[in-house]
Image: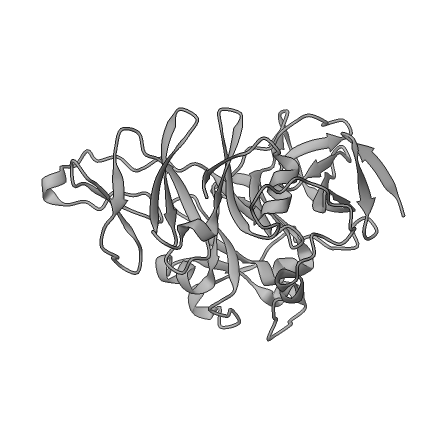
Length: 324
């Protein structure tokens, strides 16, 4: 078994390079034609305000990497089934536009990408080059959301969805990682050794970064309330659980005290306790009303990523749990 030592731990080859193919010219169809999608299918969703797209994790179990472009910006959509981590990045680094492939390696049980321009290796969950010419470079996180297809299409009926024609016309595609997700296994190499504190290894956490520090939210802790105020470093933040519980969003709260209002259009509404101004809990957009005036600003989203706790902790051991 091929092993390469990186930062004190070994990357292990799981399959040959490019044995898992990528999608480089992704075909999309409109939501009305996406009859192949199941309501419970977890997707990675992105939007630039004009174009909205969904990428099925069930399909990405087979591909893991999609090189795409949205609003003229080059992005890479990535999915590591072993870590339950979906992350989208701008595929620009050190002034170069990159295209990514699958190295066939696992580092800390996590997918390792390589860029075809320099052959450098990149950690999927960290978004950082860990070997090669680009070592030390970072990719900017592109805001994305993981949630069920049912909730995504209800919120974004205009969405495009990655066509499953990509998989050779497969119909009735199911979640091929379901058995692993139900199990207690942490990856497949048996080499995961991280201090898990009192959070279960395969608990889902929402992780994000602010001013160089990493923070995490235990998703199970949001079951009691769809809206939780907290502090990340010196920044007040608000965490909003999506209605079906499959994901969450993080926004800067600034000086506001935000709480949950009525569910409108199937989505949580955020309400400022003092001003009574309202925002959509999924998009952060203001829910305009005449008494609010025309100047109400959108909430600023903090890009975040879902993953299993063992994976987030392995990459960011100093992470601060702000909701537990």
